[in-house]
Amino acid sequence: MEKEEFVELLKKRTKQLAVDVILFYDKIQKTDATRVIGRQLIRSATSTAANYRAACISRSQKEFFSKMSIVVEEADETLFWLELLKDTKFSSEEQLKPLMHETLEILKIVSKARKNSGSNK
Image (cartoon, rainbow, N blue to C red; front, side, top):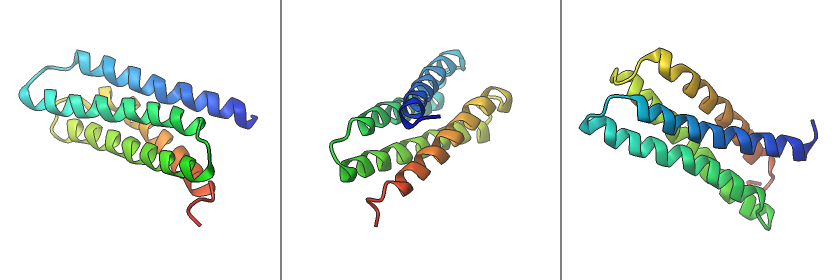
C-alpha cells in the first residue's frame, strides 16, 4: 500500500470512528453521568479525526509531530472514556468492544507514525 493510500484510509478510519461513537452515544441510556462521559467521548473521538486531517496538511515536520501528538492524546482519551463506560457498566462490553478495538488500533498506528516522524529527535 502506498503512503497516500494509507493516509486516506486512516482519514476514513478516524472519521468512521467518530461517526460510530456518535451513533453509539445516541443509543445508550442517558443519565447525568452518561451525558458528561458521552460529551467527552464524542469530543475526543471527533478531535482524533479532525486533528489527523490537520496533521495530513501540516506545513513542516515539526507541525506534523505537534498535530500527531494531539491525535495520540485524543485517541488515548477516547479509549479512556470507553473504558470508563465499560467499568461503570453504563454500556455492555459487547457494545463497547468494537469501538475499543478500533480506537486501540488507531492509537497504535498514530503513535508509531508520530514516533517515526523524526521531529522527536
